[in-house]
Image (cartoon, rainbow, N blue to C red; front, side, top):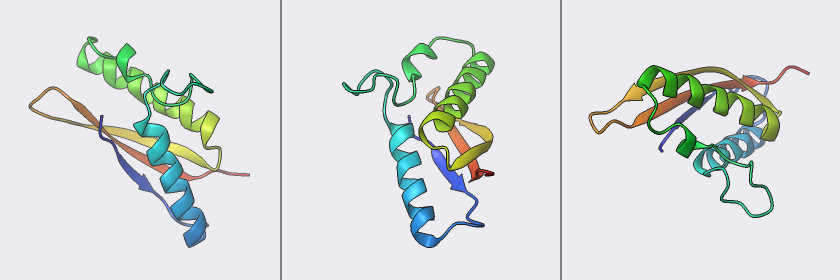
Length: 101
């Protein structure tokens, strides 16, 4: 599943911004269960397949918010929006900002 990441860069150095963006892209591109040393790493896309569209959007949003909170504490998810496609795929547009504290 392809996702689009938008990261608010205020308060981040260029190096920190680049590092966080790369970490988020990696986290969101991994299927949960595929990493031998950490089976929870990644997004569990497979458990979402087959649900009605509105339910799938909510499940995927929650999964993204939870995993980012665990694996990338330097940022917070501010919103997740979805772009539908004619082939039935959801493409999340994920917006982040620097975490407080």
